[in-house]
Image (cartoon, rainbow, N blue to C red; front, side, top):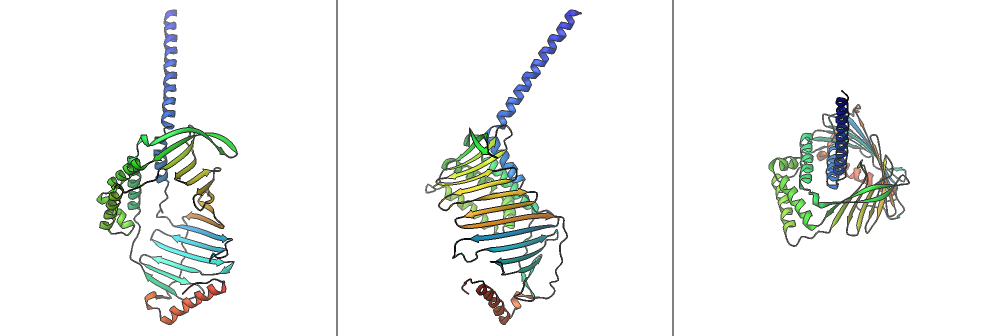
Length: 363
């Protein structure tokens, strides 16, 4: 009886030991796979394409505020403010209002409605009627768009090889603290760039992809196919040159959260860094440097850009499932039927606004 209990204890200890070893092996395997730079890039590509927001069939509104301010005296549209409200609904009806100011003075204000092929717009304070323009129908098929994006993602992923990647351990500053990160490097030289690009072209050069893409971008199928084949032949020639490019992802150890992106080509370098949970900074070092911040919060994006002596602020906000306002555009005239006198008056009023603002423009 005692011997039987000893055997049970022995088997229990052995079982626990085997389980412990299995857990350790599993953890080490996960960590090894999780820290593999090739896998990290594949996951990043997948997340990037999966997070691209395609407009749904819901009603939505986009608010855009843009301000351009410059200390350069000869910039024509200094201290420009634009406010755009864009409404879209599932019947492909689009409504927009655009208000603009320069130095806090009213400039051009527009109301517009698009129903399928017909677009109506009014230049407020310039012409009393809506002007009608007929545009060839080119509705976006979101199934086709998703197919094109997924095909592009698959072609890129299938063209990458583990040998293109390397990894180092380093440190970066985040929220005023030094943190250890993995430096995951994709080195693109002439040889592997050609290999990747040729593989992508070969995978995308099929009738279904080209047909859907040609419809989406309103390009002739044969022209699109020829352009793709021409570029393949161009890079396949001995005259083709390519400057080595390094794409570097800095990721937290174990969690692989992306903290920083660098793209280095020759003397040019783009850096995008995570500042906090909502804010990213970016800097482009080239012949003319620029830098700024991008802030994400809920359905809102705020971008601030500094370029030489110019500051640009852009705010975008998306609101879904809202009511679309109605505009009465029954009082309209086809733009092809507008009289020469009215055309002259429209241009003259726009020119008068430009003169009042102290701007110059050739007409």
